[in-house]
Amino acid sequence: MEKTYNQTAIIPIENGSVGSPKGFLAGGQNIGLRTGRPDMGWIYSETPASAAGVYTTNVFQAAPLQVTQDSIAEEKKLQAILVNTVSANSCTGQEGTDNAYTTRKWMAEHLGIADHLVGVASTGVIGMQLPMEKMEKGIAAIELNDVKAPFEEAILTTDTKPKHLAVQVEIDGKTVTIGGACKGSGMIHPNMATMLGFVTTDADVAPDSLSLALKSVINKSFNCITVDGDTSTNDMVLLLANGQAENQLLSEQHPEWQTFLNGLEIVCQGLAKFIAGDGEGATKLIEVQVSGAKDDHSAEVISKSIVGSSLVKTAVFGSDANWGRVVCAMGYSGERFDPSKVSMALGDIVLFQNGVPIDFDEEKAKNYLDGNTIVIKTILGEGNGHAVAWGCDLTYDYVKINASYRS
Image (cartoon, rainbow, N blue to C red):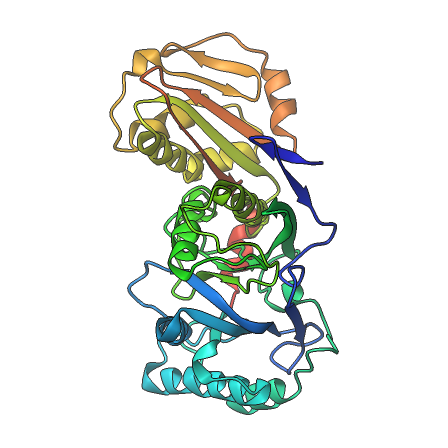
């Protein structure tokens, strides 16, 4: 289905991913880090691409993030990205940092490009050194035109399914493609970055404008999801633009800049929702819509407070229409509002209106909560501020998965 913004069609690509834009190749393979599944992924652009990144706010930043930021700082470009799973290469000291730079060097030599045109990413167990012999052999085995496995499958850890999509928009009469893939299931909290995300486009975009675009859409996508309240040491979102669509250079002054932003937002928001819906042990996607706040920032804070509440998440898991948990989470968000103006609904079932509960059909509410996607709506009556946040229910399986993560 097409989605329109100001009459501009955003057309989804069937089974689209990071390899969909012109000039990009992506793939994965097994190098012996895991049994029976791909464990190393790579992205390659035929030409150096403008690059932008957003990184975890955790003070313990893993070595791959340091190396990738160093690469982009050189000339704001990347041509390749290498991702490994199992070892996060976090809290691994100077050895871990040296290993990250070494893998960058090996990848660059294998592809015949400069070291600083390679970004690296890792995910997995914190404190584990990279298995360098396997990494070296794995990099040497990469064949750009002989893809062993999809990139989106090679980057998964506790995820239950691959996460990817791509769309097309028209800019300057040229078809521009934007594609993305990500991984994320646990250690997800709305404090960017909270997973590994990779977005590519064949649009020609000025590097500084690309960075502004990424930061803009992050606040409407990856910054609006939570699974368990934890922010990882490793996670980042990278955006590459190689210009092969041959549009006029995009910047904030371009008349179709918003068209590009709209397409980028659809991709990032779609990936973010995939992560929220695939939270560890999750059975339901939760969408929290807040409207009538004093401003958008207030609405964002309240929406994240609701979707991040363990009590709200467990109530959704148990199909319990416990509206008290929702208004409680609103109340401790830190935002000021008049409780007597607040209304709240599950989908179209109103449970709480103008500060007091109202009679509702408990069975109807339970049947609604038995569904796969739960929409919680709150109206504050303070102004025009609005926001949306996404999360998932909290289940018994979340504890099981994380109690034995290293085994």
